[in-house]
Amino acid sequence: MKLFSIDEAKILIEQPKGTCISIYMPTHKLGTQTQQDPIRFKNLIKEAEDNLIEGGMRPQDARDMLARAHELDDYQFWQHQSDGLAIFIADNFFSYYQVPLNFDELVVITDRFHLKPMLQLLTNDGKFYLLALSQNQIRLFQGTRYSVSEIDLEDVPQSIAEALRYDDPEKQLQFHTGTAQGGGGDRAAIFHGQGAGEDDQKENILRYFRKVDSGIEELLKNQQCPLILAGVEYLFPIYKEANNYPNLIDEGVTGNPDISKPEELHAQAWEVIQPHFEKNQQELIERYQELAGTGQTSDNISEVVSAAYFQRVDSLFVGIGIQKWGSFDAENNQLEVHDEQQTGDEDLMDLAAIHTLMNSGTVYAVEPESVPGNSPAAAIFRY
Image 1 (cartoon, rainbow, N blue to C red):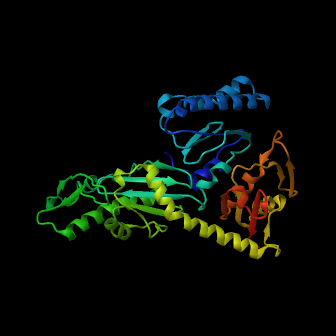
Image 2 (spheres, rainbow, N blue to C red; image 1 turned 135 degrees about the vertical axis):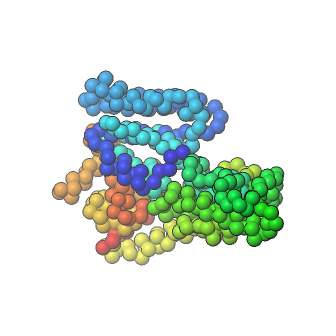
Image 3 (cartoon, rainbow, N blue to C red; image 1 turned 90 degrees about the vertical axis):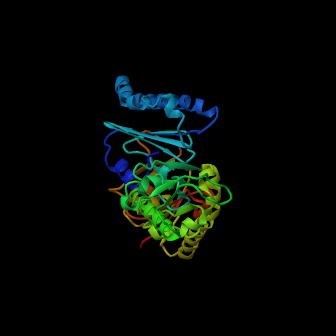
């Protein structure tokens, strides 16, 4: 799974020119629904083609523009999905992301990509990383409140054996593999040398974790989301000594992660991290309420969109799944909102969120009822 980060978002915002196609759909990991997903995908591609033609594009040009998307019509591709699929297409540009978000089906064609459904992966609200540690296996997961997906770890050693295989050959390290135990035990993958004691074993694990941390740090650079450890308890202080990721939290998920399914790890991790998110969100809501009436907050769509465009928004709440279609004339600072999407419209909530993120503001993609003022969007201004 390719990690969606703020750097990836910047590419989607800045690189494509001309007509931009954004396609979102829910996907499934198991069961008969995996057979239905390709059908939904084909229907959405057909919808995009029809919309392009209705917008004035020649039929052959529309088919050519969508040709890369048709390459995803592959059995193996649909057997290895997360909870949602996002596809972005423009002239000489094609990218897709399999993410732990359950999207509604959506096709948007404007002069830029529609990114608001992805915002939960760019904010600190409800997104976290889970690092499952053992001496036999390393797994990194990206989680949200509702789901979890494993992230590819190409440059991270997958075991202590792999990490230390070529280190210090003069120590004649010998590798013994036991059987992983439940109940918090871990006899798997222990390195020791001649006469090696507990200190030698700890030092070997620390060297292993430093190599793991180096790969994790590179993968999560510029990320601000919390990282939770899952593993047997005695490994936690050793990893924390090796760790350089600034948002590693103290609490972890204890037990042998090698015998746990991703869904089981996710449930335990969410119990740990949920209070953290609720505290942050409640503090921001209280700050909004304290500043209400001072001119430093607004739940008026016109004011929020304008302030976001002109770099005034410090913190923005947007309701998940809510679109407000219209247009914004930045030169005259005028906003036009339509009840239904019209030709040339863009999602104004998406516009506000993207400009807030690009100008170092914080975006909270929350359930609609959690937005202050019961509005589609609300903001705290910098000034």
